Image (cartoon, rainbow, N blue to C red; front, side, top):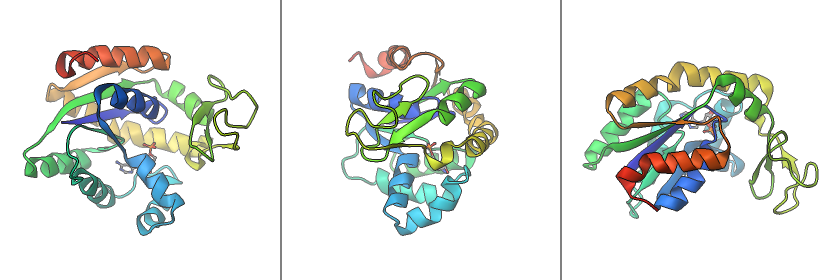
Length: 218
Ligand code: AMP
């Protein structure tokens, strides 16, 4: 089964994906995480993606689609949650084509709805651990020792694309290109809209409640 998670940057996609995937046994496929790992490894894809990711633009569709297609060929098969893909209508259509070839289709779309001003506040206050990747927030989840990770003690850093100007750009890209996917999937009758403006636990609970009729209680 293929599920998709849509939400503005900062809407909690990463946090909610982790909880959802654990609870309902989905494999998590985050295109943003994959690009960041490829960039850190300075691989050919990472080098190509860096200029787009660091300036808040979308990586070209052909690069992303090919990367996702490769991951979906994974022989493990099964349940996948796509987080951050598709990000525009062309990618949504490419995904349908890709799945159709495998006799599959997107069956579930989760939409974390968050006001742009709140998303902006969360993005610019987000800090991540340079060692283990744990996510903090200087307003809502500050570390015990300022600037240090609670889990591994390494320094916390700001993602290059979470700086004010780039975060603003990413939110504009989201409104222009990604947000129209909400109507696209709503028309297919598979969209679950969740209010992302609440605490992570509250969001996770209403997300689970919303999908349980389809996926079964866990
Ligand atoms: P995220 O972690 O999902 O906010 O993604 C970080 C960045 O990775 C985005 O701002 C884009 O530059 C790039 N990216 C992630 N997913 C996609 C996608 N589906 N299409 C194009 N670019 C993407």
